[in-house]
Length: 347
Ligand SMILES: NC(=O)c1ccc[n+]([C@@H]2O[C@H](COP(=O)([O-])OP(=O)(O)OC[C@H]3O[C@@H](n4cnc5c(N)ncnc54)[C@H](O)[C@@H]3O)[C@@H](O)[C@H]2O)c1
Ligand SMILES: O=C(O)C[C@H](O)C(=O)O
Image 1 (spheres, rainbow, N blue to C red):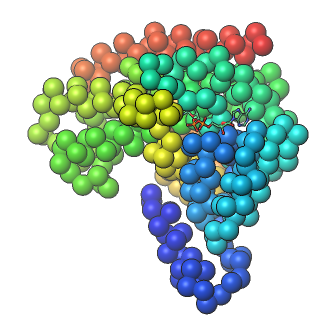
Image 2: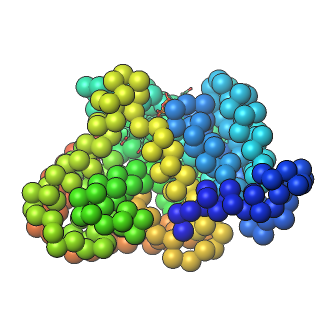
Image 3: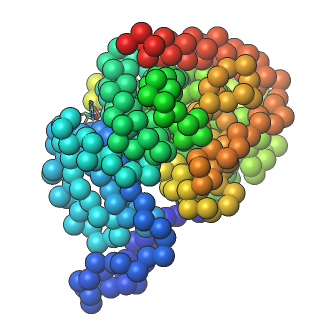
């Protein structure tokens, strides 16, 4: 299911695109037409994400938008012989064209962390960016599925919801905070510790996307491992919660996770596209409007469908350690949600 990139490359080779036997553009794709717009596409995440979305055979049109730098990215990516037609857009005046007709909008626009910062330290700059982009979305593609990467996700998603509410376009089924990178990390770290092949591993991650609000449910990890001690689970939990900081520190001032985030963002966008296309049983973790706890937004497994969220799935049975983590995360997550809502209501 997660092998769309490889499948796409293989199918390009089969159709002669890479072997040189045919120079025709591919037109015979049975998947419906789907437009994806990436806002912040010239950045550290945006560029590799543009590449991965260009490789996705479910995408027929790819709009690459940033405040600057997009003509180069678009020209570069457009030479790849896959289905999606690529167009680059730069600056406010081209945002409407970039968004018009979009089925999925992916937002990695905004500043990343430097060592010593929390994600919440990005709020002052990124809140305004997200607000203005979401205002444009409600005008130019109010029915699009919106996947929010910009941090702090725990606040930017509530901001987006308020902007859409004000514009009268809010559909809670179509707004997602992307927490897939937490799942990607939890799977990788668990596989390493449990010594199982990573390809078959699944680990739900719930809560939010910052520090202790990231709650991996290793008690539900598959395949189950009996070899992990309580200390191992605690260490795995902490490493997943601090995964972003691990990358920020390793990059030493040159930003945060970009490549693994582009991968995670592409996985999540692919799941949304499959849902829109009616593929059954597409389940991913995401930070969405939710009533499974007392908090109005919460990350958990969600079933994706033709209208976005089809079902927000419950938490399932939790270990005592996870129950404790759940209670501990609630005050911080609540405050971040309220901060986002207040910002959008006041501005
Ligand atoms: N959700 C997650 O798991 C996750 C993971 C990694 C990073 N992030 C977040 O993603 C964001 C982007 O990270 P990055 O490393 O790509 O940063 P970056 O600085 O490399 O790129 C950000 C891009 O956004 C663009 N931008 C700024 N304002 C814009 C606007 N109004 N419209 C369109 N584009 C605009 C910039 O020009 C830049 O190209 C950060 O907030 C970061 O914290 C989230
Ligand atoms: O840690 C960050 O600031 C970026 C992102 O949220 C991550 O989890 O890598």
